[in-house]
Length: 251
Image (tube, rainbow, N blue to C red):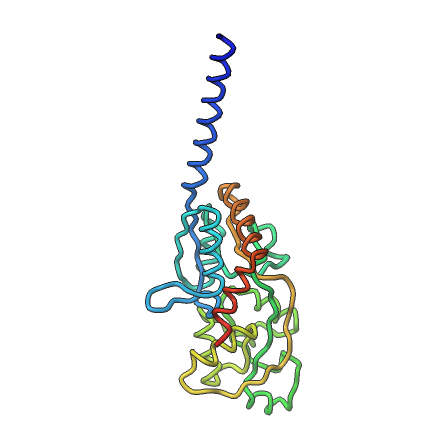
């Protein structure tokens, strides 16, 4: 009788612990901050959309996480994720100088960036592929700044602004000669962001280093990174990430 009572008590205790752990997991709340970089992350009619945004929403659903999304300039978003637990920033390039700063969830997308230059600037430099011959517009705090400097572009040739759309406007007005973007990003911008088209030259590939990830504050709940990574892996295996990409690129 005592043995049966002991077994029953143990079973109840284990059941209670499992329920407690399950409740804790389901109550995890993730804050996700991002910037305006269509088609990866952007706002349309008050709603956050984009390739990376949809991947994150799907991952949060799969991982049973409550996910709060907020749009802000990239430098502020990056600093927010650096300093606030249970917060991630996206879409983030995983670079050696950033490696120890975050827990990296992904990869979610490949990273291949190109230099896009105004055609008149390429003519002026007689087609030079020496990047130091061009004035660049960049998003403040983004990884391409380090890539450009590593390629020999001096700091005085680089002008920073708050978003990719703002940099595109600098380029369209001739205030800078070139900018950095992915092929998907630039194709989207040329279709949707410019009031009048400009002639651009795909000048040179800047880098294929790293990939794009969700960058999670390292002081976050450990279970959060584990659940998100498992969710992203499942989405990739199922083809769901490819389907999300197609929704934005098959236009």
